[in-house]
Length: 222
Image (cartoon, rainbow, N blue to C red):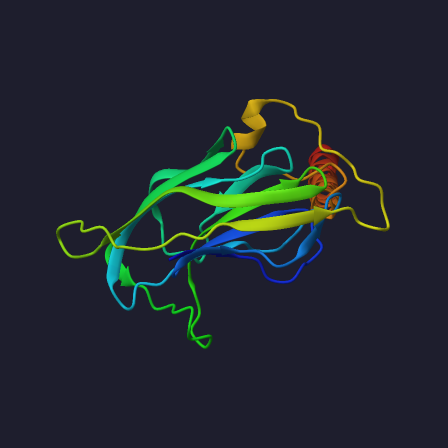
């Protein structure tokens, strides 16, 4: 079974979808502020009852009127060798990758003490209020048995409710172009992350500028 799940809301400027190896399931439980991006993993899990698998191919559909795909990360994830890295096109995310040597699906949805195995983390930014649906258009998981045998599994979609932050008005994100959907990463201009990196960049630039001026002064003094 394919699962996508979301834990409790954490305020941030990105809505993060985490793809896990377990039973492939979507399950969303929380409300999200439209003008405050969310750091709330939506997990895709796949449980294989200990069967080794070495290939994953997925197509996930999402509501592009409410969400914008902002990139992905495979840090601490098992899929490092991508056939097609995650990319968005017309409200769908396509991804496929292999796991050399295979990996056992250790996660069992019936046993809460076991943890899911991350495949990839997908990042989204919110655009507006509404109910955003996630669903699997296509999914293929292959066993690591030397024959590429498909692993039988079920799929379950999910619905995420996006609500306005009561302390602020909804700030709609303008659609620039279709290429924005395929960007590797994205932060709104008023994002704390954006401000932090801007300040850090200015600080580093100031330090470098100061050192260059000091070096030039010392050189001229000689």
